[in-house]
Image (tube, rainbow, N blue to C red; front, side, top):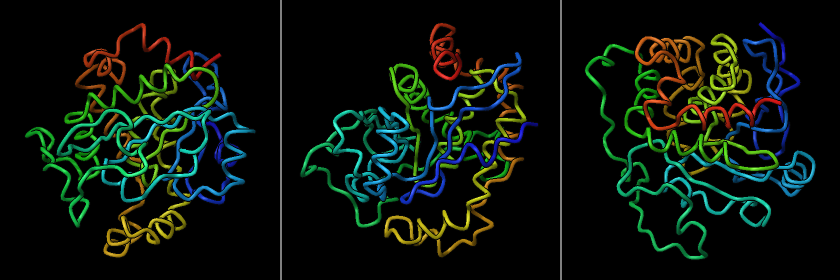
Length: 277
């Protein structure tokens, strides 16, 4: 397995879990290209220096936000929203009351969307397929994204594919679960082998203490951070290993799942080109 852990981190003042998907080996002897796709935790607390670095130095031009509608509205407009060169796309991976597959009223100064006192109340109950009932809670959650929000999983990958010149960043709140699933599929399409995808997913464990501490400062996430210990938030390699194994068994791999859900060979080739020279 390659050792690219330290060089792939993008150290910013306002995030704790930002890294580049470049530099990973592929099954044909190549490597993914740096500066094309980043993955990250919440971008709401970026500093002015962070924005200058992302936009000016790294060339960020597209944000793919995987949070729920309520999370976006409760957290407010992040600083990248004021940068005209950067486009924002929204693809919630959780079932919600009302579907939004792009940035909507959150782009307005005074969004006219009513939220309940508890933002989680805007989420619909998550369904678990009978054949997945015996899986671990994390695996069930990830399969839930694929089963209940396949439209938005594909939509997020499509947004990455057509982002054009410059870098794209995929993020959710922590940058480990929803972001982990979308990035795992993107890396698989690029030809990154199973074990390297698992290793990338598990890298968040390196920064989990700082990540939990950051989220605990936000009223949106604080309750969940204080009611569960750090170990419960720590990603485990076996979780992503199991998800990829199930995709292999059921669909012939991530590419097969994507093909079944309308992201076919041509789009997969275009996504692969985004991550490869």
